[in-house]
Length: 324
Ligand code: TRP
Image 1 (spheres, helix red, strand yellow):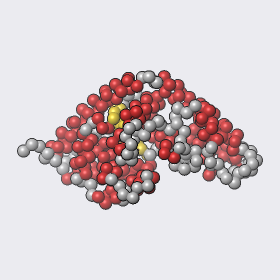
Image 2 (cartoon, rainbow, N blue to C red):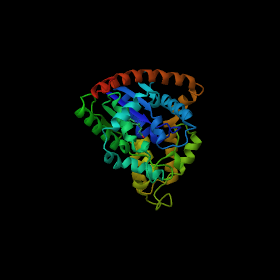
Image 3 (cartoon, rainbow, N blue to C red):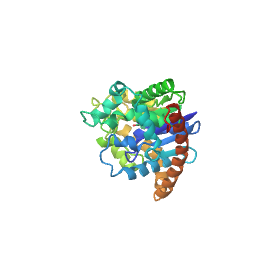
Image 4 (cartoon, helix red, strand yellow):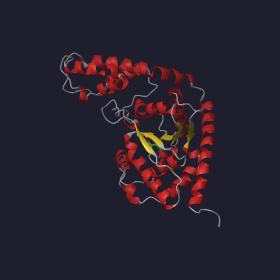
């Protein structure tokens, strides 16, 4: 099975990226033929400042390497380097009714986050470009967070229109949704770099501790011996993700007033530090090897391009796009 996923290069990765997407990429890497794309064109739909883009691309690729994304086994590449994405995006645009895009809940959320009153043409076309990313490689599976599910549904609808109107070129892609619940940021809001509430993957143990101590717990639990409600405790959300086996114990200890928040968070900080330790080491070892990472991305791009070029031949033929 061929699988594709992508991520916008917004800079250093945080633990939200890990539990939302990358852990699932890592486990699928052994089972599927994978393409992992750095979606720099998609990043432009939400960022007007492009000055950090090249640096962010390399940073993210380095993070992927340190996590264990295998750049020789999987095809890892930068979206804007394979121009076929733009061509298929344009053609898919002809098949996509505007109302499909206007009702997209994910885009509406993105606009709210950015305090935008109207979307640019590029932002409105975001899911069309995403559909092109997937279809260009005839990917059948797309691991994404649940916020992206509407986009995969749209991709299915777009390729269905294409297959029906021209000829059967594309498989209908399936979303593989991550089952890990979304981790809240250290202030209880959605984890996002813009909100300054993230824990980066390469954070030092001291910083992890400092940030974990900020996590929002049950406000009604004031003393260590007060019974608490772990259902509204971010520390418990983290505990369930990073060390599930003893999370149940913490749950009942908290409810019984046997576990204070500070002690719980201290324990959690240790869990998280040791969970991220192997990453920290590998990431440090990659420092200075940016040139090597660039080479790997160039090799990935060549492999991606040859598949993309072949698909576009079929698309142009199906659509009668030939010189008369
Ligand atoms: N839209 C995705 C996100 O913001 C990134 C992305 C771009 C993507 N192209 C893709 C994901 C293709 C899956 C498949 O997270």
